[in-house]
Image 1 (spheres, one colour):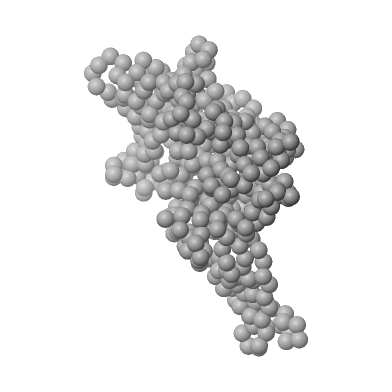
Image 2 (cartoon, rainbow, N blue to C red; image 1 turned 60 degrees about the horizontal axis):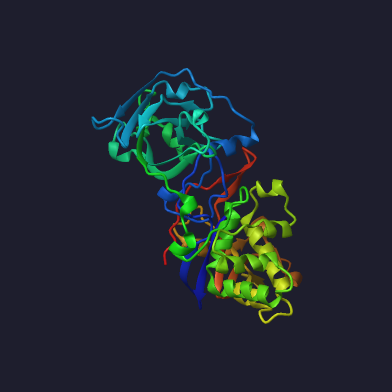
Amino acid sequence: MAGFICGVEGDQITKAMDLFSNDKRIAGSGTSYTDLSVRRPEEEEMLVPHSEFAATEGPQPMEVAPAEAANTVDAPVVDDPPSARFTWTIENFSRLTGKKLYSDVFVVGGYKWRVLIFPKGNNVDHLSMYLDVADSTALPYGWSRYAQFSLAVVNQIHNKFTMRKDTQHQFNARESDWGFTSFMPLSELYDPSRGYLLNDTCIVEADVAVRKVVDYWSHDSKKETGYVGLKNQGATCYMNSLLQTLYHIPYFRKIGICTQVAKAHRPIPEASLFYKLQYSDTSVATKELTKSFGWDTYDSFMQHDVQELNRVLCEKLEDKMKGTVVEGTIQQLFEGHHMNFIECINVDYKSTRKESFYDLQLDVKGCRDVYASFDKYVEVERLEGDNKYHAEQHGLQDAKKGVLFIDFPPVLQLQLKRFEYDFMRDTMVKVSCSSVISN
């Protein structure tokens, strides 16, 4: 599930910011909490290294399908150019049987590279494609290289419709491949009329530019930006993104710090983390916080529901705030109210129930923007036919059912429903659509 937090003034949404891990990094051939915000199509994928993704299945040997593939590198005529284009022509594409396929090795900037694809998807219904360091297992300890690159599937009918995505990454032994798990839908790729597969041939391009390695160890984040980050405890990028977003709500940050100061005689993990983010000179660890949740190492490497995590965190903070000057401020900050109603059409009967909420779950499928999602949320449902409403003394009646907002909180939290259950596959699948969030 995805989401964002926005400031609300009266009934108007005045400011929105992404909640989940929108740190603009595109990763390797694995999975992460993706995605928690609605983004433009070109910013769609949030991925993790292939080695981590495959951990659930154990080590996977390289499977090279019996396909004929031609590979060429187009580059300026200079020795070891810092950038180049590699073209990979894959014939008999629809007959590939292996789960993954590597291209021939090509050299850019003196380094060996290759393209890795999953023709039937890396456990998704999309073509998965990554740039891989070809000789990663033979490189010396501590190696690292930085590259900006784009991967493309050429449209052989209309070149302007070529599917291309670009990113950048610092490759190392732990993350030796990087790219896009959901590069393009398989339905589009395998549709001959689309032009991506012509005469059962697929053409893949990789534009690679090798850059100077970024020395993260010498980078002083506090000095350069005024902020410090959070250490990734395992697969906790979704949690770190939530914590950083909450930290950047000034009032929330202040009440978290005040809670820790008010109870300085003992550390409060839920509050001390925000205190450290404010005053620490280096990145902050989250182990004390996850320990307070009762998590062990295994839990840190599991993807948890971020909406539930947000609620647990706020509940714990509310409990720790009791007896301090900031008691009740979480409720004041995030609580809104709406009214559920059922109104009979043919008789004078109406049932209403006022409820509070800390966040709202909005559909994004079929909604062009967040306002359309709100329209769908308050859409009135007709109860009729076999679904008539039992109106006490009036018996079964045709009725209207809906929800009306009474008031919004100062900070409105929206959980965007980016996943839905697929009954055929018995799993949650990502909703492939775009939705606009405007200021």
